[in-house]
Length: 572
Image (cartoon, rainbow, N blue to C red; front, side, top):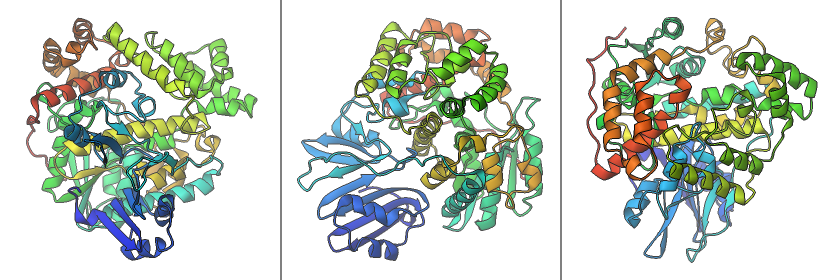
């Protein structure tokens, strides 16, 4: 049962097997029907969808046994609970919470306050609601005929990163082209971000080849060192058939605009409350131009910029090569030889990493060695209470108790998947709360993730080259002079501008904070942080705290509040 666009559902039946592909996909009913004719076990239903592009749920019933799964990227999830003794599953945790009268889970909220975020791994089978459980993204839910839950079945595994750049680029080109094709296949108008960065620019050129009509949006940053505007202008010149919207700082809401009155009832907190007004404004504008789906480049950084922890993987097989690369990196981070050597040589298990992270939560922000492990080591915000830190510590230790497997044997692949899943959770929540056309992140489609992670990390890191895998994959589609960009624009000026203009709203949130009432934050320490010209790194946890506070207020008030918008932009 549910409510969705009928074009997003493809179903088939053959004998005792039924299957539904729900979402954006290349599925066809006739093909699904032929593929499930010989299916006898629930897991075999997966063979019917192995080569499909897109982002979708798979639901199947085989002889009365149920199979349900979302996506490996966490853009689509499966959640479960019991209602009056009956097992129930859904694609939204808050729906199950409402049906079962579940309360928010303070322990999960405490974990969400950590920065960098770790909820996607530490809370892989938990939600932000008591008694509502999550199916880990790589696993499928299996129900027997009598309603008993069968053992979790892993339906997806990350690829072995063994392909050359040329081989992986061919895979990425096909997967990304097909992913964007599922966005444009419905006809009509689609829209896309055109920040000027390589990720969004590539999507615009792919969409322009297939879409009936393309609308691009660029908002100009306030930082004078940000050259995104110049690169976006060059891309617009090469896309003359598209409609281009250009927003100045005065025409688009600031970051943090309206956050004081924001109410976003959703299945979990979302750190993007910072630019919810900006995203709402963007979707309203493209909706007025007829867009039915908006493409964003989120996930591109995670897929095409290998994390420094790949150097620790490399050190096990080619130590001298790893040391040369590390020497270059350590200069950028101002790290000493001894600390770098210690960080590289300390090859801990994932379980040991979780336990170490649990003991480091209140230490100073980690330096270069803190990002050489399985994922960037988290820290509690300076305004977290001792009680919150205890909850965070317990969650990390509980996650370590069962000696969990990492998301992949390689640290670099595990880290990339962890970052992608954090983004997948975010875009899912945004689509639950934003008005206007849905947002799609083609870089987080499972086929694209698999293709991008298949490259040997050393092939994807070349001195002087920026995202060489994406550049090689899009050669001939995106003009060569745009693929030559070797940097990314900064947005610190936009952050501090929004912080200054809306500091009053942020301070007002601390006066009757529900997080403080729950014993998770010290509002006096938070107010002091907001009053000082703190470094960006010190305020990074602020976004997660705001997301949790707005979420709790939304549950308390039971409804969203309007967000103010600026005048309509010019078209050019």
